[in-house]
Length: 339
Image 1 (cartoon, rainbow, N blue to C red):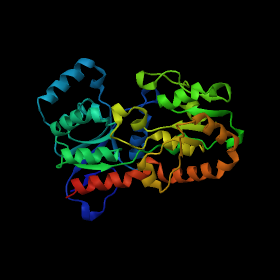
Image 2 (image 1 turned 90 degrees about the horizontal axis):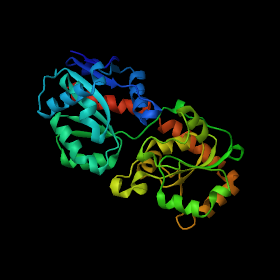
Image 3 (image 1 turned 60 degrees about the horizontal axis):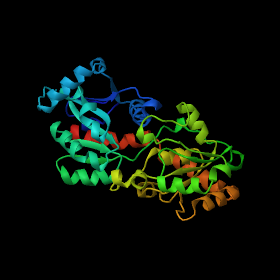
Image 4 (image 1 turned 30 degrees about the vertical axis):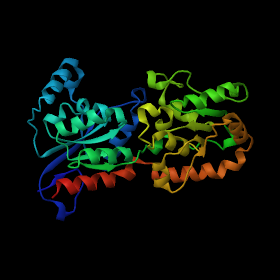
């Protein structure tokens, strides 16, 4: 019997009929979940089947009723159906409704901060998940300890490389410094106190994106073009920006791929996951004592860093695409469901 991915498996692995689809919920940059959409599209482009969002999920009352039903451990799912569900760690149950009533759930998880671990453990137990993909290796280790019966697999953060431009050479760009995404508050204050705004073209979000929808640029296309027009981007992992929330999880995020693909000088701190993946540190480690002086020095010697950012782009083109992760995802699914 066949396992249905909508692509061909080797005859030796054809043992039983299992219909595997990814839940493809359209997401946009306004949702701040474009990374999930890119993952879904990479799965589909590689030949994987998909399931569109249920029309019933438009109704809040239906969503609440189904969640209450799920919490009673009610299940009528078909064993020969599997749904890959993209979700943030604390929202897995919500993201899996109503598909958890129709088949087995294989989560693909982002943003599994320590505050979400207890809820995530509950949801994985509740849905009797056997396989779970996670972008953070620290979470894989923690959840494997909590749930040894579940196989957790680290899938490093990726992007759709077609979203990003290489931009002009560094010396020809118009934005000197772009503080990308959420700010490291202490580091940002040091730059502001040093009056960096009046010394160069310094772009940052006056608000905090984590406090709600607040964007520097109006749309995704404008954002990516502005990154590609920046000489320096500042990026820190959340473990440094907000250690109370994420102090135990040091993980690669798409911000680093964005800077590398756009040939920017990245100033901040490099997650160990990225170093382990590509074999070197593509980030200029931030000077917390006198950050403005470091930034000024970099701007005065941009020519010294052109080869470095060119190399970073070439490496990112090779390591960052989600399509590079699909072989691992499919192999793990085959090994579990084709026995």
